[in-house]
Image (tube, rainbow, N blue to C red; front, side):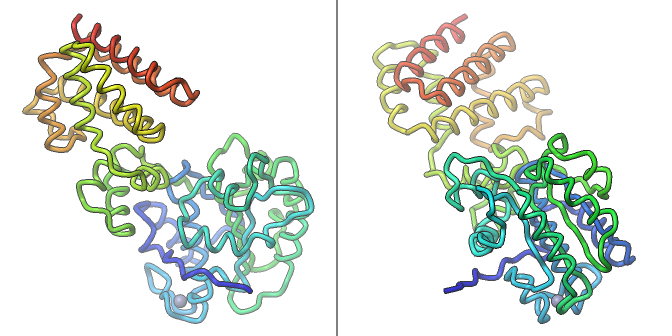
Length: 379
Ligand SMILES: [Zn+2]
């Protein structure tokens, strides 16, 4: 019945970007100075969880190299399937009297699919529907029990906890464990929101910050891990805001050529022919909410880069994050959209995004927006 997910490729070399965090963690292992309570703190989608798993595998590896786990020893094979007996996991679940162990198979599957996932995706996977996740009292008891076990195979017992934010006040049950841990135990906490973590826990952990990814790192990740072609990887990364999970969501959407739609909309609104505007709105409404949201996100990104380009001048704006064809569009628009209008357009896109989030009628919303855009462009 137990089906083991495929190995997950999470040695340091497979973790996207985060070079300085990696080298800090490697040094800790190399110098034998791994703090017994370590907290990786980073924005969602920046890769804290990937780093934590890579660190655990590195620590447990029987054949460490200077930079990474070997990937082939007995320990690595087990760690990479998340079935190493000295590597334990704890994460948010739903309900009382439920502990992480019940969802270990889901966890392995989820990590094999996407270790950059967010908590909502995770809770969906375990059928939480609209219930709040938590890390409850029973789970804390389990953690203490697991870390008091003898070490089975390796040099360390590791407890990797994802999102200690969900401990709430139950976290106090772990203080003694963190303060006086049994020998050779390592507690790795992966957190996203410092403000939601008990101070008593925070102050007992060594903190390693995991910054948002660079666009280029997200782009590389999409190319290397997901085989996404360069141009699409680049335009996707530019919309993802350093969040690899977000990039995966955007890349999974059916391809829609946002830059072409954008240019067409601007043209129709500039000309202001009512019939053509209605026709555009009819077609655009058919794209569905997810695509419309992404289109608006694209529009905001475009306007931001457009502003930079307009300020720097076409010859100087070399670091503007636009693809070649988008640059052409931007340069053509400089005659039409001045600085005064940029703010109005950005506000309009924001309002549209707000309306879409709240399930406004799409045709009415975008027809109204088109009329406003016509006024802005003609002003
Ligand atoms: Zn190894």
